[in-house]
Length: 468
Image 1: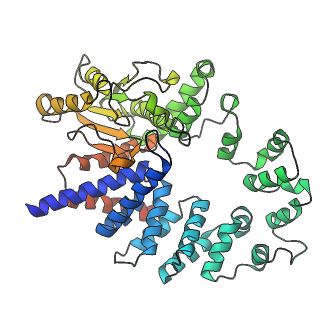
Image 2: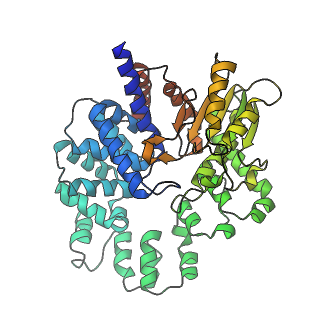
Image 3: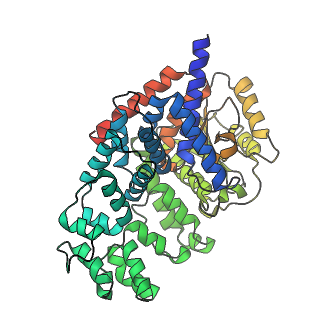
């Protein structure tokens, strides 16, 4: 019996960490500061690494966010390797997926911590060797590349080495970007040959008007850079390839008048993105009832503006695509998802009652997307779910899950509604199907063996796809 209890506790600990690694980014949330977030995350990483290191490393194969993936890699590399043949491969495969600036920041943190063991050097060296153009990195991530080269005692190519450490040595460079950077100091025309983030600084130095600069640099901008520089309501982005959650954030940034005027375009784009995310599971989930939180707290924070509401909006369209038949209840009582806005209290309990008491057959799935702060009246959602699961549906004919987009720093987890309904953290709506799968382990009916088997399958698939 003690072994079973130990396994269940271990499974709960690891799932708690997964929820944090999916949702927490160390930034300010609606109800907690950035410092509280970082302190809470630091404790969780240390606790899970020390007690469940193989499972901690396996989390690199899950859909956790980039912030926590980099932290896991750093914690593993800073501490002695304790076995597990896949640990180094997992780190290398995950670093290959991270944005380069995050990896260079990780290398800087390792150098500051004086981590220079053989495994770390090999991973850093292999990552740098796989970079498609170190000349581009030298221009765009100059400090990060210099730090990595110094830490590894590498000898880069002659031009790259001179550019990093002796820029005045050469009158010109054969590499077009290196030479454009040299010329951009005195020639405005060279500014527009550089990547946007580098050219932006030179344009300011030369006093180029912002509008003129953006117009001329536009051909060299990435899709995300173009979207970020456009102004809210006046932004006309290419919606056809935008991921679901990012598209939901874009829509929510538009004023109501523009959303209404572009209803067909925006709704079509959201549904197309949802179908891409649903993939072969589209239409296979049977009858689905959703309760989605658009209360005031879904406005997020200054650094994560409207993020919880965007996740709920993305989940709405994804659940619509996954379901054979679909009904939705927004906490505000609204019925137009395109005009949703964060306002009012959070009557989750009442909306869950509405969803469960709707005419017709009971739903096959109940999906709740909320930060878990049920306050109108407080605690009603948990009581409704307790009575429903214990007395009205003890056979679990309806599968229920609560997805929470907000990490609760004080509780070291995402806030839960009821022990009888599993809760999983969610950052991007498109991850919903995978998160519903892993949420089953949070019901307390499965232990460490089942969770370990699930993680092993994810690791095997992840490494296979990465070619590691």
